[in-house]
Length: 397
Image 1 (tube, rainbow, N blue to C red):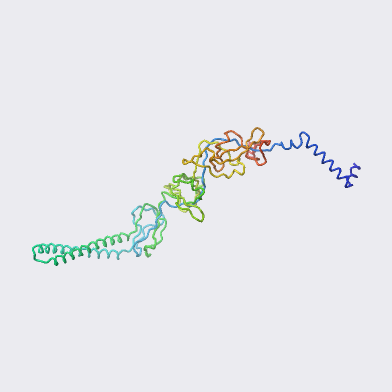
Image 2 (cartoon, rainbow, N blue to C red):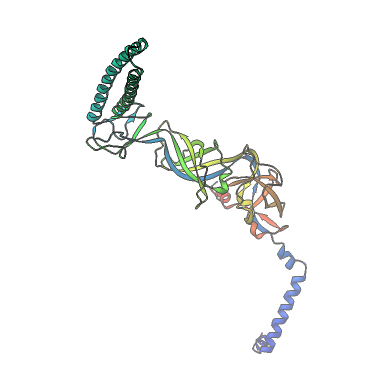
């Protein structure tokens, strides 16, 4: 030991000793069971068996709930409100009177036109009798043609005046009817803008009436996904007011143009709301069902290698199914074959939120590696271990 210490104290001797030890380690690594065995050291992995089941490919959007119908009501007469008979939240029926406008001026106008029209009728009757007598006298040669033509012109002018008065009376009566603001459809008073005594007119809304038996969720979708959306596509809507509850609806409107700044277009999802639980202005999450499969081979998205995990959509047929051909997106997974990991090319169908459909390349019951796959290469030795969650369940038992 003393000799070894003396050698280490000498620099040249120390270097010679280190070189000798390194050579011995290199020789050991070349011996059976050396580095080759180290390369074959099994990697601990977790697996999941491919299953069969149903899967949906959805598009997640968010938007605001709007009333199925919403209309602001105005007064056609520029005068003051004399009476307001409904308030916010009151249900109303089509044709029901909601408010009244002061109508003395309109009523006087109707009375004046009716009086003028009665006078015109009397004048017209006298002119027609006189024209008939003059025509008989003209035929008898008692009057000139000039007299007859002058009377005819006067009669035609009076008839035209009578027609004008009839039109004016119809307009005046319509204005008189507009002195009462009526509901255009069954609904609920959402807003009341004016009170009795306020000045109303065409530029001042009095009420906003809504029909909430149906509602719409207004949202936007990007041009990349617009091709997957069509009228009638089913959609599921959730709101924070009712946790865990799903409201079923469908796409009822797709805007024909895109916003040139955002490359987004507006769509609307219609919902039945006869129970009145959904309110206009609520924020909603929308899940549009773009495609679905009833019986498909499914694996977790986590089983796909990282570079393939962000595949978004498979080519869809018009029926919403997925085409099983070479146009499908290709991905790779590790399959556990006994104690060895093998890479496998697969083709992707419907992509769900957690699961993905495998159309080609994998059968139900085969084991795919989900945890530990980034430490593997094709042919690597593996050791299948129980997941932490399953170990916790086992400990609880």
